Length: 238
Ligand code: SAM
Ligand code: CA
Image 1: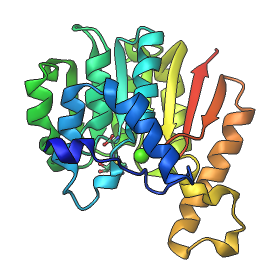
Image 2: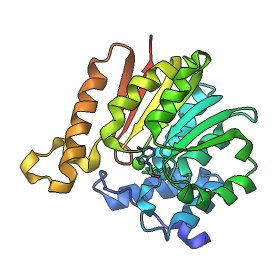
Image 3: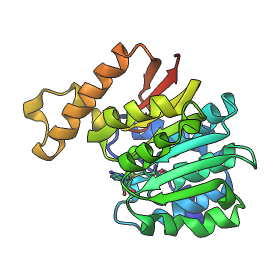
C-alpha cells in the first residue's frame, strides 16, 4: 500500500508535458505534506479501472489551501468517486463543518468510506446518491441554503458544468469559491476540432463554452490554473 501511495501518478490526460518536472513537484512539494489518510485513499483506489478519476494530488493540495483561506465550513461536492477530493475537504474544514456530497454512484464512495471513517471525519459528510442537478435544485428549494455555502467543488459530467454553475452561484455566498475540474480537457480546448478524437469532441465543445462563459460572467472573478487537467477557480463577487 505504501509503495502505491508513493508512486508518482500522472493526471489523466497529462497537461504538464515534462514527466520529470511533474514528479519533481509531487516528490518535493506535494507528497511530503499529503495527509496520511489521503495517501491511503489513493492506494485504495489505485486498482480501480477508473483510478484516473481521482483528483490529482497537486490540485488537491491547492484546493485544501483555498478551503483554509476562506475558512470554509459548509461545502458542496459534485462528483465524489472514491472520495479523494471529499476527504481532503473533510480534513480541511472545522470539526463542525458540513459537506453536501453528491454522486450517482455510491459504490465507488464506499471504497474510500472506511478510510474516511478511520480519519474521524465522516460526521462532516452528507452523501446524497443522486444525479447532481436535481440534488442541487432540492437544496435551492430551501431558501435558507441560498448564499450559505463557502465552497463548492465540481468534478462530475462536464457537459453540465454551466447548469451546475447557475445553481452553485446561488448556493455559494458572496466571497465564496467554486472550483471546476478538467476545464482544459486534456488540452483539447486549444486543438483544432478535426485533430480531437471523436469521443472527446462533445466535452471539448462544452468546456470551450464553459471557459468563455466564466470570463464574461459578471457575478464572479475567475482563474484557470493549468494544474491537473485544468482547474477553474471562481470567486463569487455578487
Ligand atoms: N472528485 C473525485 C475524486 O477526487 O476522486 C472524482 C470524481 S469522478 C472524475 C466523477 C464522478 O462524477 C463519478 O464518480 C461519477 O459517478 C459522478 N457523476 C457523473 N455524472 C454525474 C451526475 N450527473 N450527477 C452526479 N454525479 C455524477
Ligand atoms: Ca477530475
